[in-house]
Length: 245
Image (cartoon, rainbow, N blue to C red; front, side, top):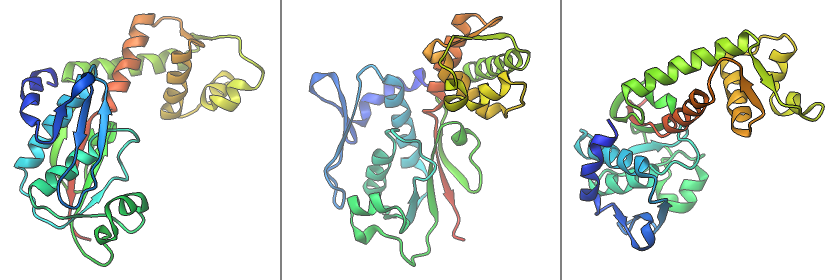
């Protein structure tokens, strides 16, 4: 339960600190890492608590270096990578990057390119993929939704798909060709097609947020809850240690 972990947040000041102005900063001054900071809104308590829990688990995990830190399954804009790097250095675990991770190599130095080094991979995975992580040993996992919240999200997802497949929805008047160009799955459904669930849900999310779609038998409050839970599940995070080869 994310809320139940909040009391431990204040003990993480070595890595994450509250600074003036109500913002939260992650600051690195450890050897080998350029000084950097990431700012979050002081209202975004959920990410703060998730990060604290992730770092707790990482500190306790049996882990030696070097490891190749794989960020390919990390969603853009999530705040976990730099705190993870700081804790790896705190523990003396050397981390490297794949040769194609050019942004990280440019930022942290050529000496962190894995090259021909054979080392286990430490995959940082976020969002729903984190909840289904496989292919190695999960050494840290933080679910951003409680079990009850996740059950409700899945129930609402199934209900929304049922409404869509049953044609129980209304689209706002939009310019000709706009839906087909911007929301092709909904355009296909509207024309009698059978788009995949994943593509359909992406389009529905965008249309609901813009107010251009109404679900006939799904109350607006339930639709808003569904959108909010989708935003929150994106904050789930896992660290998976994958063996060499």
